[in-house]
Length: 78
Image (cartoon, rainbow, N blue to C red; front, side, top):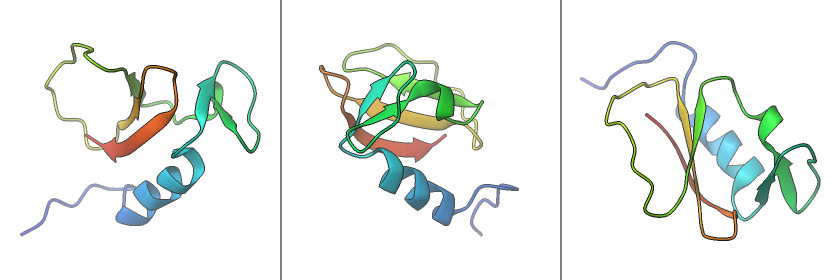
């Protein structure tokens, strides 16, 4: 039986992926090439290459993976 998390669906992940993949995260500006961190959901974390992370699973937390220059490479909940 799959884990069901209230208010989080595969559509949510797909929506965030469409908004973020290939864009650079910035502090305050969202446009066609960037996305402002302030516009991410409250429960999120930005994961940089080689970054240590806690292994706690929070199904409502959006994990935004970026490369060395801050471009989003992956988006997932957990």
